Image (cartoon, rainbow, N blue to C red; front, side, top):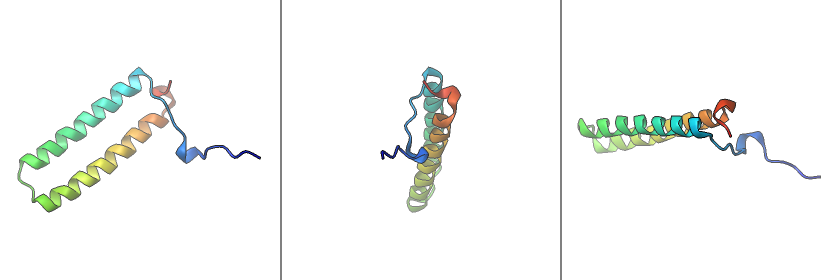
Length: 72
């Protein structure tokens, strides 16, 4: 009996629209991180901000990839 890949770990290839949205999302997260670095937030606290932004961006991109409209 072969067990398939669990839904939580499936791979979704993005179509052109999905890739465009993912790039836009990444740019906006980058802009926000660049802004927090430029306003002089304490380095230790900004490291936490960076980690949380990375996590948020990951889950936002995962959501984009799970949307059938963004898949090949």
